[in-house]
Image 1 (cartoon, helix red, strand yellow):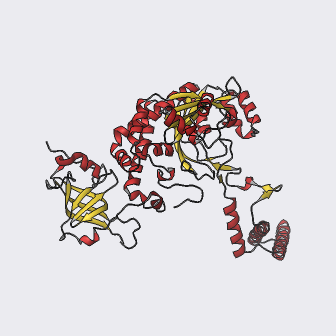
Image 2 (tube, rainbow, N blue to C red; image 1 turned 90 degrees about the vertical axis):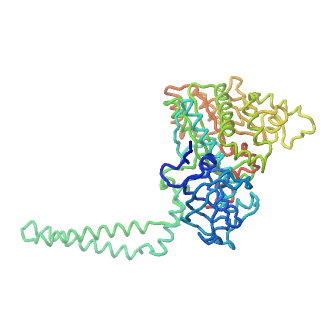
Image 3 (cartoon, rainbow, N blue to C red; image 1 turned 180 degrees about the horizontal axis):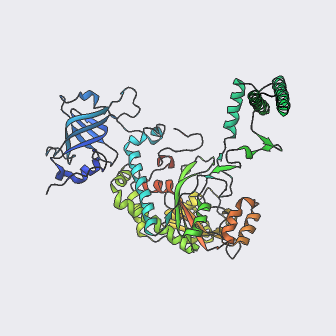
Length: 546
């Protein structure tokens, strides 16, 4: 029985991945296919549409269309034709399109197109954010990223989490570190006002005095007419017109007086910036995490998760940091740190298995071109139980590491683990993902539950080979008195967090959550070395292209 090619529900175009999936069973069918030329020779065009790694070959007769306008790399071609089996001598193609009609062509200027056929470094294509997805590497990364996003929603949906949207603009500092991008219109408004006052200078004192005199004159006229009205000698139409003139003159005087008060620069009050004049009437920032807002939801809805962009104004130029990055943040009601660790392990395993089941061709490409161990690493995560080790024990292990693993960063109780420490634990000591738990409270956030020893908090990090920290999570402090004491200890203001205390005052529950750095997960999966290459439009200090 002949198979029918899978067509998009609302388009006549057929995706190349669906043609290749059907293979020779689709031969003889007429379809419309669109994509971009990768390679060409004589009357053969290798066309890719981004739906998969592989291309399909277009066979275009010279009499059908000028081949010179089709053959350049990057040219877009939308064509109709019949799917046919290639000659037996052609072992690379499973099926090809014999073009009968060219529907649309987007030409390329060969002298100006910055991505001609050939190999380009990741550093080079990073300078072309509007074009770099046309490369095999970046299109494969995009599909892997898409698969991981799909897997994320699948995992939490299957486990009855509600997907919530937390705000991108926030007035709370979740991490308490202060490394936030401020959201304000004060500077923009000040610049606009300065330019406007240059074009239309504010009124002078003489202008205001003249307008005030006009108001007095018109007020006197109205008074005279109103006096006549008492003796029935007034003209009602004249009185009405005079009142209207007085009203307009008064309004004009008010506008002049208000305009004379305008001052350039940022508004100040008591020597400080007056944020009451800002757009939100208070200081606001791009969010560093959706966690605090998710906690309001978990206190009413049970298990929830949020998945969106977060922002850190941190001047870091490492290969693992971005200024704008995506986070997956689940929050679980009636959950302890132990529950938190179980959820985190299950989620990471699910992501890895999903790539193996649904994105293997792109993973094989990444393994071939960049990291030969990429697929084995995914299989290792799926097959192994994550090792659990307390922070205290981890420090002991690092101190006892052989001399050949001498660390650049100091190893002592009370300092945060550096990337080299994390990678030693996962790649050398255990050759497995590791969950480090119960960190010193001094190096963790204010909202984490303090353990009974009053030295550590119920926090955990999932660290994996190649990347290091992938997940950070904790059991949240559910006691309002303990939370208040912790915040005062850190010198934090209490007033902005009154709503957060309310969650502990009214129906508090044990709850836990974690955040997975989504871009780091893509980095881990693809085997690339720089996190700037796993997000379509990377933002980092000094760069925010497009």
